[in-house]
Length: 121
Image (tube, rainbow, N blue to C red; front, side):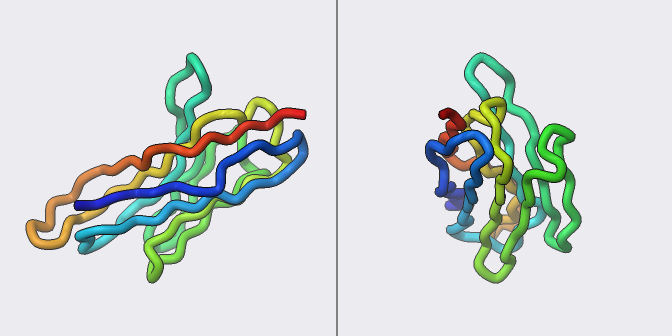
């Protein structure tokens, strides 16, 4: 069984910063792309940023220059450093990853349970 568990969400004032973390655990053979998505109330879930196992990154235009995605392959972790936060960044943030399972070597896409980020004064 494979799990993604996020942490680090919370309430922050406009202009502030937060760092999200996501840990992958379970019967994992290999982790390919890892990423963050977010979903605001009444809206669809949107891509925030992704990072490949080699370190190539991709960002949504709305977060470029403010957010930084990184990963630690040895620890099976992905991070999202969020700076200059504004109320439009308020959403539930989800970790996502393509993971090959140990044993049967099946590649599947996994989601975490989400962590709430609220930007408000």
